[in-house]
Length: 224
Ligand SMILES: [Zn+2]
Image (cartoon, rainbow, N blue to C red; front, side, top):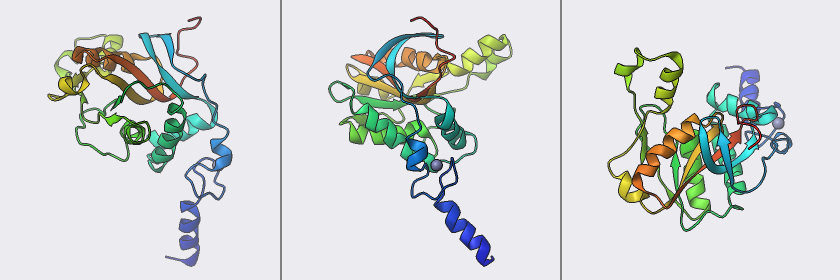
């Protein structure tokens, strides 16, 4: 290893993932301040997939979109902690009810807890600690239903995969009568949130809301 490559590595560890400028954080303060926040407070919204109540912190555009793509597509999961902190900072201003329980939208087929590469899990850990709530990691599972897939149209197929959620065996008792907050990275059509909400409601919670780091402008039904 040459001196130059060592220097590069040291510099790369301290460079902003978005602009490359020197930074002690994965996203430098300059880039972080360019994230555009959505409207404050909870909102009831008609999403393409159906009605849902919740809160999204930032618009999924510009530097925020870049950050999320770096995290999800390029696998730069170091970003997850900082972005989770930013989401938690904005979520603290919300009325969250009496000791909410934060449930991450799970990864397909993954049941283990504490995955630092999965933003919803990281965020649920941060949110439950900083918003006086409980972590509901592992209560909602995503499962494959392959036998039916081949017989479905493209649209139905997509929906089927998106909707492949179920409660873990211990979940109903833990979610019943609670304020449940489903946590995800990006809200687009709302198909995932609506599918997850439908499953959570089986546990008869007090209420079920969503909380996402970002929200797309284009895919939300307009005028409502
Ligand atoms: Zn930067």
